[in-house]
Length: 487
Image (cartoon, rainbow, N blue to C red; front, side, top):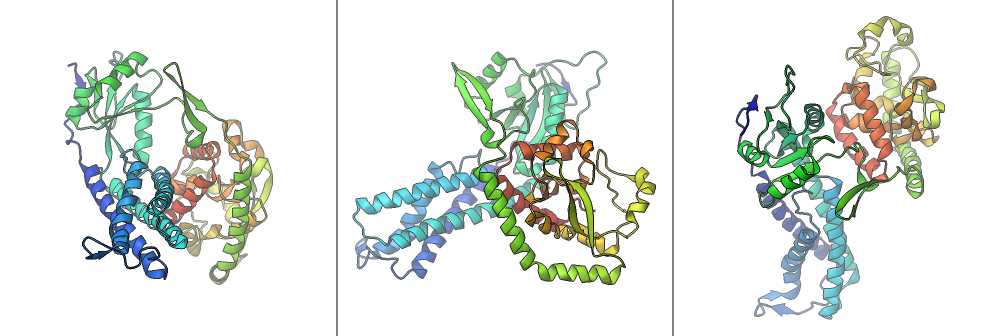
């Protein structure tokens, strides 16, 4: 064994996954039981094909056995076969829900085959209702379980994978920042292992212990980690990486390799093995087609319905602004939108009427960077404006911009800048329509640096999908209610 830099003992590996799986199995069984009982209670023809049929020596009706035992156990079997209990899918959001959806399709096929095989003339409506109820109930309970899991991960690290980062210090620190920025993902870096000793005089500074020259597997086991993350293109030679994978066989440790292609996820990435060589195929982003048409229709319908349903709230906010401060209720400002086209964005006025004239005097107090201008205690913001900003209620009039096709519900935030300010990579954010909400809102809002904001915008553009939009809308509500990063 070689030397260690800043080494300190780490607690043994947590056993949270077993307890979480046990709770999940129980919840899924109760959920399936509730779904089948709901349909059996509401449907008059639920017991069609099982009239007067009894089993177990006549003590139990066949229908009761199916509702209370067969359906829940068959549903859990389908979940298991679809990988819904796979440790790599637990708490991973859309991936976990996709596996539940696949299990639901398999459940529908299995019930159909069983009914045909046993020659049961069951009610098709009842079967369809049970299948849909199983999907709906399980999606709701799995989403609730994931929320609980992510909250536990944010508050403590007991339900997270402990990760050993392997690679150059700069690459390891970059990955450490990504992991710690989103503790809900369940990856908690506990140490860094450098493949080579630092150069003479080079200072090694890191927020976690740094090790040099150790045998990785014994070191990981000693620290109680359960995942090795190899980061950076020059971290390990190919034969070293393959040997490490061999050493991990049967150890229960996970091996994660961070690719050079970053901020590209989802269906754009495919692995094409050729003669044992895995090639990472990255497809170009698709910002067109039926999905884009569906997004436009969803935006228009949602904006129209939202304006109608929220009209009392909009009227109340307008009256409150008018009563507490002289001046116009609405504020319009030129923003840069899709393909660099300028448009007027609508917002409730949250600043005093002389805010633009006072801007230059406050430039030196700017707490942001890049094209952003933010001050936590901005003296130009009115008292009621602070509350409107905290809950993002000042953005609601932008539903008009969405209805006019100038904005979308989800997308990069439109900035009060000129078209010429968007240079280089930043200009890619103009490939899609700006949004009322986006990755900014669910990833820190005003607390983000300009570099982080650009990175998130480009990530959205490169990985856009309708499902991604729905996920962002879902997470926006919790972020807004928590008032995180709003000022």
